[in-house]
Length: 201
Image (cartoon, rainbow, N blue to C red):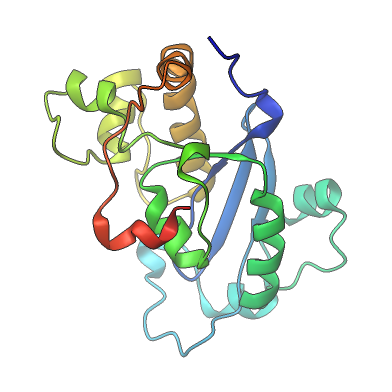
């Protein structure tokens, strides 16, 4: 049986539309959280849900900019252009195992494919679906977190840090069995929606 990937390879992600990030490492520490300058006119910031306003996307100020500037030594706290984000994240993701919920949405927003073997998507993990007696349905992160960990998330405004950490904690709750299944050649996840096959290599 092959050993599981080292924890340094793991990165949990969650994107909020009109914002990108964060990335948290295996311990849940924020390693990337950045606003992105829109490439088209934003007609609805969905502020009640996302907490994002026009000011966030022009100044790029994030609650976590101080941490990110320290960790990444970023030269500026301003919102980055989409192409800058895409280039940076593409390099950042290289060689990483991405953990998340419905990762195909995050990868589609970023316009970046990732090797399917290097993803751990809690929305597709069959043992979680079976435990909730929904083997053929995608179960929301809020439901998974509550039913499997008695943990509340996504109450009020969406928080991508909270979402990334919840997905990571779900993965870690069964990581040993998940990785053992993969090492035996038994992929333990359902397939993502076929319309998102372009998101995987």
